[in-house]
Image 1 (cartoon, one colour):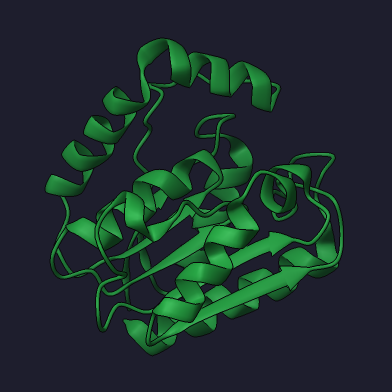
Image 2 (cartoon, rainbow, N blue to C red; image 1 turned 180 degrees about the vertical axis):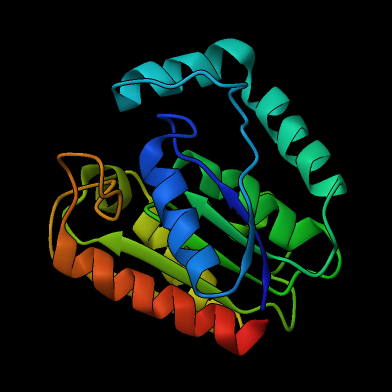
Length: 192
């Protein structure tokens, strides 16, 4: 059993995020789902990113740190899109991290230090034609992270959807989502 801190995407802590967490819990893992938006959810990525900009990305990172302070140190951090920034920051800066899973996004590892932490495994998942992941630098950042780390994997799926593993959204792609979930479960089993 693995302790997991799962950070939501720009739509907020939605039924799709809760469903993903429930699947992990069903596999025996303890999953914490901090709500960085204090109960607010959005219908579009632009609305959610606008809200995050309004309250400030620094404030969102502070909320993530505060949420992590209430958890054990030896957790796996999972982030979806906007939540990747929180997951990646904590995996790189909070001692004791068991691993990180970054879904739909990746920031340059140099944002949080000189190198990815030694001994902290990481998986990155995204679609090859997702305009947010492939065209905004995230795929390049993911490739650089994987090249620099000792235990890192990049999984690129065929398609153009951003939230492809969220079963409650029109962007859901079942085949890719099932593959992502199986890889995440293997990762948690190996690093718990």
